[in-house]
Length: 228
Image (cartoon, rainbow, N blue to C red):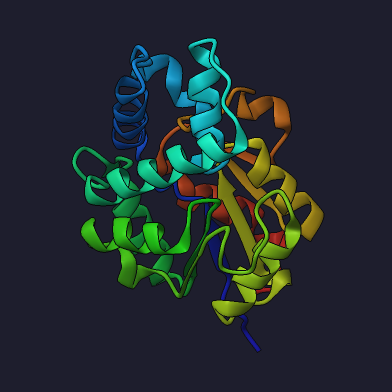
C-alpha cells in the first residue's frame, strides 16, 4: 500500500521571511526601553528560538541584562505588538507555493513544526492565506516541548496523520536538524533562512538555495522513505 509522505516545515526563515516584522517588534520594545534599534541584517540570525530568546539576544546586543521578571514583561509586550503587526512585511519565500503545488500533486501532505507559539503561527499563516495547505500547525506550546527535542516533530507528524518513516523535515537552523536527527527523519536545509551557524555546516541530508529546488530535493530523499 502506498503511504503518503509528510513534509514538515519550520516556519520562520523556511516557509516565510518573517524577519522584518519580528525585528520591527523587537525594535519597538528596545526603543521603548531607551535602547537603540538593532539593524535588520545583523538581527536576522537572532531569530529561531522563540520570542523570549529574541528579546534576550536583543538586549545582549545592546549590552543590557534584565531580570527574569523584566524579560517576562518584555516578552509579553513583544508578543502583543507582534500579534497586531504579524504580516505587515512578512512574505512566503519566493517559489514556495509553486513547490507546494507540485509536491501536493505527487500526493505529499504538509505540516508546520515551529518554536513560534501555535496561535501566532496560525495567525500568520491565516493572514498569508497559507493555513489550509497544512494538515497540522504545531508550535512550542502545542505539546510543551520545543525543537531540537524530537518529541515535537514526532507529535506533529502524528497530528498530521503521517508516519515517521514517511516524513521529511525542512528547516533553516540547528534546531531543525537536531530535531530531525533525533527523530530519525531526513532533513532538507534551507540556506536562505536565519541561523548563526551556516546550515551547510550542520550536514543536513540535502541543501536548497531556493524553494524551486524543494521538489527535486524531496525526490532525492524519496528512496529512503517508506513510500511508493
